[in-house]
Length: 263
Length: 371
Image (cartoon, rainbow over all chains, first blue to last red):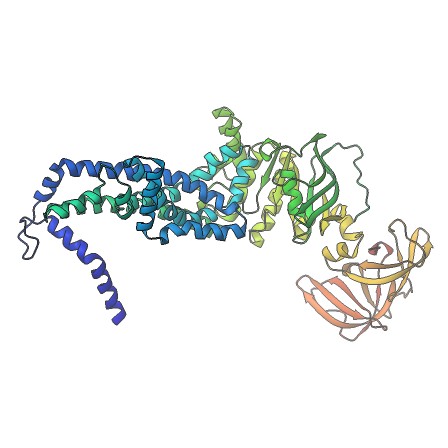
């Protein structure tokens, strides 16, 4: 009983602040405290009128799209190669893959900054994209690899047996079957990239990303339009996560169907 | 290793293997395989798990490379040919149907790769699905099929390509008993219709006996015996072969000589005569003999015309009715046990526990095992 009420507390703790922000994003008055004085979309109108916000939103979308696609390509190749590695080197690879997740982002940010300086690479959305690819890649591999490992190798053999070369087999069998899983991983990477701040701080150039711009807004004034901006950013992240989740679900249902049929 | 020679007289082999071997690291999976697959036959690779039967099939399919020996298809070297270039198709153990395609697209997969015109593909797929009685399910998803239905689709998908050789890797292992017997009959019918040469891999002796034209019995990477189901059952050449197929009585024996073309042997069951004899038997050689329980007949002592060749007196120690048959375990005076099997009569059993009986068998029932 006590544990059950703890679950509610836990959820309140997790989502309470988000709910407050979401609520005040629709507040009719500029006051950021109760009592609540009615609903309005004025803060959304204001923030969408801010050309800098729109630019930041665009930048973040470009970076998230570019880095998640790159992560998708590099990560898929890695996930496909993993089951073919000898067992002993696999353990080493696991640790190495996981390291960027465990390392503080600060560390990665400083390291990348130093690297870009050394190579004379001018900081821009490109450097942010590279940094985000690096950051999201381990998450992608971690989420995708178990599904890829369960991929039935005899399906590829069947395709070869029916006359498909290695590349045709990948195109007609491996990729379509794994597509929902890989798409889920790409959308997760998109969401991760979209609100990444810590590493971004070090590698960002003149063009702001969205979370970075919201931070700088907060430094200037405490304005309710920040709430509206946050809600918009949250909605975009959530949407990509939800779509990604749908893809995962689709794949699992297909796998389950196959399993029950085989038992 | 088997010293049996393979007769290919009058028939050009479709596949021929000479001295074929396969090593995985230091593990020898196959060694010295000499085998010809004849046009139109159902050749079964039979053996316990780990005997190399699956590896041998995978080498024929092109999924494994042999480490030694030759592999020819109609006289052409196959060793460097990748699986997609071989005119051979396979039915996989767990079917390996493509889950993202429906039944029709699965069967059409190979034909589309061959760039057949659409109308021709439609005809062929329809014809194949009809043959395996799945024509009503062309638009079903693979995940909606039962095991038996998946099996049929896998068969149609492989045969649609008109392979010169069809490989079947334990295709019935994942099915339950009832469907398995039905599918065996179906396989035989389909083989008859298409006249395709089958290589069938199984560890199940019943499947092998029912289906095969010839059986390759394998053990520890070698061919133990090659022959028709009857030859393997009644004339096993080794202890392994005799024990692997069906129930049998194994007795030690010593060769005593020849009489009227039969081999005369001496053993714990007295003097025996065997009609078939392995080559190279020498006087006083120590061998084993195998006598199938159903070839031994029992009679009461009074009724029996007791001969001391291929016949002994014994006492019934155990009576075990198993469905349609009865197995009697009997013990000779010297302690040797012999099992005899009869058809179960509809009324009471004629013999009782502890009863003295006379056992006898014909010289055709005795198989001499030299190894």
